[in-house]
Image (cartoon, rainbow, N blue to C red; front, side, top):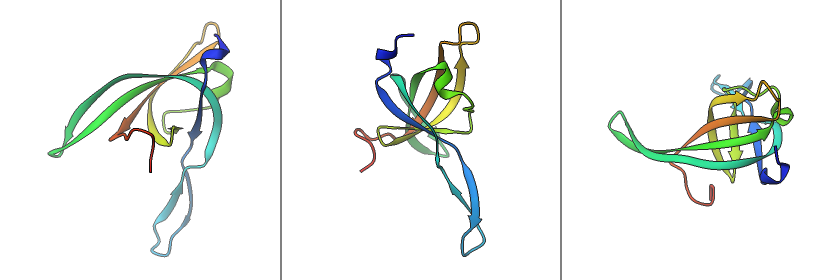
Length: 115
């Protein structure tokens, strides 16, 4: 795998439940699990309806070096360009151990990240 293609800096976040707030609700945080470089390709976008509400959903394909993302799973998120993507699938190269492809979805994206 050519390392020069992996120019995008991304963070992979994992969910961590901590203490409870003043109302007794568990507080969830998303600390950084791994920082890695990836190539990013926006595969498709579309409009979806749920409970009568319309929202956009864009699928992105992140390609990482195999050893850079050891230990990730589909309960994690990807922070790229200030926006959070939900991981939908992880496809590691089990034969050559060169790359790992991660499909992730973002809902109601904004250009340029969050304000």
